[in-house]
Structures are given as C-alpha cells and as structure tokens.
Image (cartoon, rainbow, N blue to C red; front, side, top):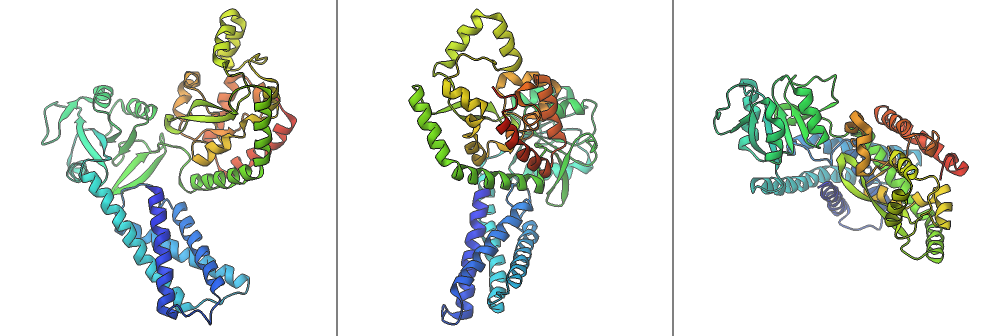
Length: 458
C-alpha cells in the first residue's frame, strides 16, 4: 500500500508539472532553461515525497481524504520553500512564478484525486470482506463506547471485522454483537476466532495480562479513553472519524525517527553494496575455489513482530554442517553445553579455511546488507536470533521483537563474542529502551574499528 501512495503522488506531481508548463508556455520553451525546469521538478518531487514520508503520510491509518488534505498541503509548502531557499542560495532563480503557482494548485488537486481513487478501492475491498482484521471487543459497552462500536460494526471502511465481545457481567448477547465470555476467557476467544486486534473499552482487573499476551502474539491493542495506563505502555493516537483511539505501539522505534532510520539504512546499505561489489566477487570466487557448495548461506531468523525471514551470509561452513554438528554434539557433552549456552562453538570444526578468515574479519556478514535493503533488518539493532533462542530472553522477549534486528549493535561494539549470553541480552535491551538516531550513528562508527581489530570474533 505504501508504494502505491508514493507512485500516486509522483504521478500527480508529474502531470501537474506538465499541465502547468502547458498553461504558462503552451510548451514553447525557447525563452526558458529547460534543464533547470527539469531539475526543479525532481527537487520538489523528492522533497515532497520525503516530507510526506517523514510525517507518516504513507503508513496505513484511519484518516479519510479530508484528513489527508493538511498533510498534502504541508508537503507542497515545505518542499517549495526548501527549493526556493536552495535556488536563492545558488543565485539561480530563473523559474516562472506563475508556473510555480499553477504547479502547486494542480499538484494538490491531482494528489487528492489519486489518493481518493486509492481510498475508494481500499474501502471497496473492505466492504467486499477482503483484507479485514478480526477484532475482539473487551469491556462492558456503555454510552461512551457505543458510538465507536457502532462505527466499527456498521462500517468496514477501517478494515475491521468485529467478531464479538468479552464482558465482566452477563454472557447474554447484547444486540447484534455476540458475547464470547468473560474477561478471563480472552485467550480462548482470541485463538478460536483468529483475532488480529482487540479494542479495550474499560479498565479491567487482568488488563496487563491481556495486553502482554496480545503483544507476545503480535496482536494489535487499541483502547478508548483512560482504559490503559499511558505511563505503563507507549501509545499513539489514531482517529476513527471524530473519535480519538489510542493504540499500544506494536513497535518501539516509530514516527519520524523510525523513518529517518529506514532512510539511513537504505542509503548506506545501497552505497556499501555498490562500493563493495568487487569484494563480494572476490569472496565468492574464493569460496567456490576452496570448498564445494553454494556461495551464500541462508538461515531462518526472527524479525520484527516475530516474522520469520532468511538472513544472508557468505558460506563459511561445509555444506553438511547441520549433520556434522549433530554428530559432534552427540559425542561430546562439553561441546553440547557450550552450544546450548551460546549457540556457537569457539573452535568449530565445520568451518572451512576461508570461512574462518571471513568470520574473524566479519566479512561473512556483508550479504546482510541485502536484508537491510529488503527491510527485513536494519544496520543497527539487536542480534537476529533463531526461534530456539527466544526463551533465553525471558520477560524481555516482548521487547526484543518490537524493533528490527541489526547487522551490528550495542553488544557487538562492546566486546563482540567475548560477552556471555546474559550480557548480550542486557545490551540489546539497553539499545531498545534508549534508542535514538544518534545512538545508531555512534554504533556504526564504532563498528568499523571493532571489526578491523577483530575484537572477540571467531
């Protein structure tokens, strides 16, 4: 959906710019600098899309066309203002003011038209019963919450299908909505009905238990009014028409900071892949020459919100590594204890000669830049773990998968593999709870000397 809105805005600006040139010059360009006009278009296009992206304008939300008007106006005003500052700073202001006026007015109209078409088809799919999320209402329905409930039940424009509700009182049906039990029956109601989101309407005794269960199972939690303590949980505000609804954050790194982090990931990983492409080729040739098998190794890891993805690495082990590992662990209890503790072996006999060098230099991690470009990982974040490791995080597991895993992180620049597992968990949690964009930049800068010194690598 995000890419569709970006494409819609880009096309809207292109058609607006073309029509503005026709209205002003009737495509007679003999008296203007065509090259500068083209530069102007791409500068404003880039800035407009960037500003809307940073203002959360390409994420799915409940706002209708009227709610997006202010966002589009902001995008155009700020992008044109920044362009004007730039053009005046380089003393190149040869752009027709009337053309710019036409362009801004037409851009706003075409962007609204494009988004209106996309919203129409999205709502059409919802009304046809497609792409809907099953929703459970938790709490006693009163006059305050009945308005929201009516909107959720009678309109599918928001992508919700209300399955039923849990009540603290009678289990009888209330109107068209079926009661699925009491507050204690939340787990059964969620599992039996494939619930993807819950709306908590009133304060209840086992509230924290319900929210933690939902977060552990990647179920969205919405709340009305003061049903959830804003101090205990990070919340964000959404509007369902005129009704403000709070949502417990599914992820901890969100908002403008998250979008800056993603932009930095895309830019730096793309540049790194281009610059390091000759090194990729040399490593690939070395792997093929020294051992039979594929160049890359793929391994299943847990990503943001528990989604499983395949992490890419250069192959550093023999092709039948899993089979060899099982035989090794069966024969040697000490090795099994070491592996069960760290999920690694310090003197791993499965590693090839070139693989040992790649690991000590951390060059085997370079293909993860592809995971970063795909959005499965970030340059900086907690370590991407396998499914069996999640239990080692105990109560912290609910925090670990709320941020994207990273190629490098706080523990990698604080001793790397010399740290024991408990210390790695603590450092991952420190990163998650204290994240900011400057921390990411600091870790990236510290990673380079840590890799060059091969601190704790094996």
